[in-house]
Length: 397
Ligand SMILES: *Cc1c(COP(=O)(O)O)cnc(C)c1O
Image 1: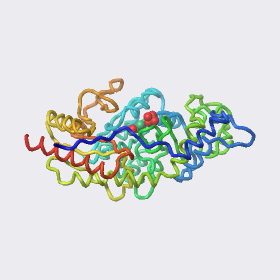
Image 2: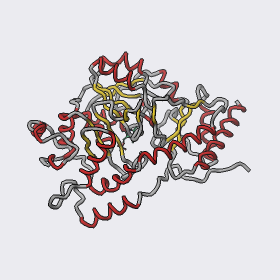
Image 3: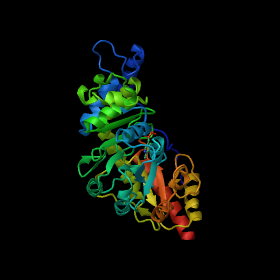
Image 4: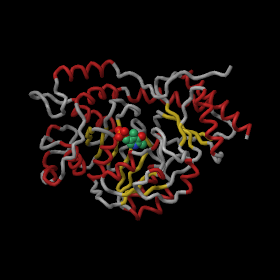
């Protein structure tokens, strides 16, 4: 009788008791809107911003309604206008090209490498086409940031980082999100901290952040922000910048603050699970692991491997056989978008270019969530199941 995994790939941990208590206090006093404060009270949202800025070493932080809002706000704050081209990864999730489309701009996709990062050679050839790169650290894989920034700086291309999967991660000691002009994070349930929905935006740029705060819907209450540039920076910006409401509320901020305090502890747990799956999948014929560079300090809330050059029916067979044994794998090679998984050629509101390298890589990417509700033994069992099913299909081929 072959073993079946019984856990849920979509079950996150409960909110820590401290977060629940803080949320109840906010509900009891009723001041959920971030600018609804009593006397000299400092709102949970303002405290969250101050604490996250300190945690990553940024001058400024803004809490917003989602990771998508963080990205559209950053794009607008960088002056991206309708019709502009914005460079971005061909291998990413739908909210990334969606953010570019939301400001009326056009994504220009850059190829992905076998290591699942943006192809910097392809990027180098496309830098002349746009003024901004929305760099997605998709599934937590970080490219050579030194080379990426050197290329973009030399070409005068502004970098905005999508850190939805790299909160708590770093490249060569510098936190992800601290390389570009803006770093954008999501606090949605499937990311590294969980407030259901939510986002954070960081920057060291006073004018950019002043614009972002006005855009987020601060009215003329920007002085209530703490991780913000001084009031004089808003002098003309406050008249020039539209209010596009996308604020975070105090309830979410209250839930997030204790979670941020334990982020590095959580990262350790995620990586232990990642290493357990990786160890169980070493030396499986036909299966390629993604080797992580020494400079990359990642936070592995998910796991990817490649079934390189496998014919489609065999990949589908592996996915189906693993599913029958309780292991939910996602595949980026399918022509039809499904669930959270879609690819650049299904985002038909934008031009669909020829991306032969990306097509090749996407055809082999298998993707799996690693929630912290899994034990290390669960991870070892998942690896055993994948190993046996990949082996069975490989041998039959
Ligand atoms: C989730 C996600 C986002 C956007 O986050 P939301 O908070 O859901 O808007 C952006 N980029 C990537 C790669 C994501 O996975």
